[in-house]
View 1 (spheres, helix red, strand yellow):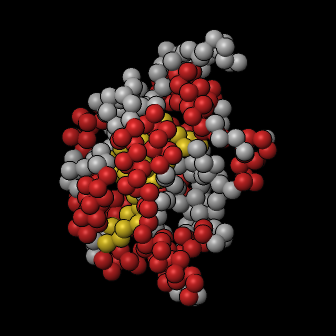
View 2 (cartoon, helix red, strand yellow):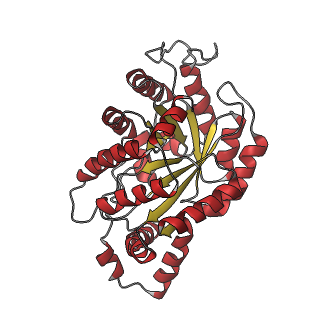
View 3 (cartoon, one colour):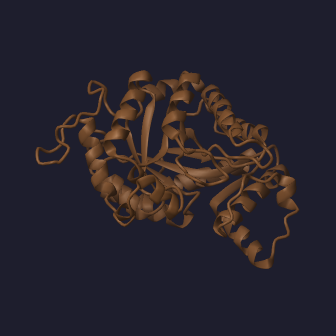
Length: 346
């Protein structure tokens, strides 16, 4: 069976304190560790009322402390928001504290709107610069303790220097991200839940252009999807009402904490809004365990993905946990086998 992993955005629930989302993250991570999931990745987003995944590097440390087997990483660090030297230091510290269990996924988007990006980067000029490949090279240079002699920061050392950078992954939702990952010989995580239309082209570009590196001798691809699994299709569709309303609010510039299924089902959608949520259904799969497994296996067969990473945005923490439990059963996850794979997997 295909390995499964978790992508967590720490969703905020309407009527519940925002900080409780972080507790739910820790609880779900412990369950994923127990169930046999391979990785648990934390996203980076800013100033979005529906999620509190603002500091993945902090959450990674806490999740790793409270789990024993599962790999823990960023899905991802939005590298243009940070200096490569800082990220090298942070993830070397994490790797030193949790050797062999940390991943460093990198994205190029700001993870928010332009005003928030400006607040993070503190420079209007930085918003117009697309130097993601160069930032990756600089990060790798710190990780190798060697930047080119003519580099302005050649004398800087990212401590502790006796600890390697964790395995690097490039996150993307288009062929551009796939091409960057391929050119640098890094793993690639494709965001199907963001842009399903580019799934096949991105997978093709990544595999066709991949260059072997000291990190990987073959292309390794994670397919990140949104899925809601319940005991039956009726219950899954009820839970999906939350996802649909959240999608509408994001697309119309009105993000808000996740609504309960009851609030979402009672929402007075206009005809245009109904068209938007109809389109949203292409970005996630919802159903009983067999139907969800069949759809995911179809996507894996088309892309040749080596692993599937699942994000589930529903209102009830118990329902979210149950969704991951049902997926673990449907894909026959085995914690003992997963631990053996994790010990030899980048």
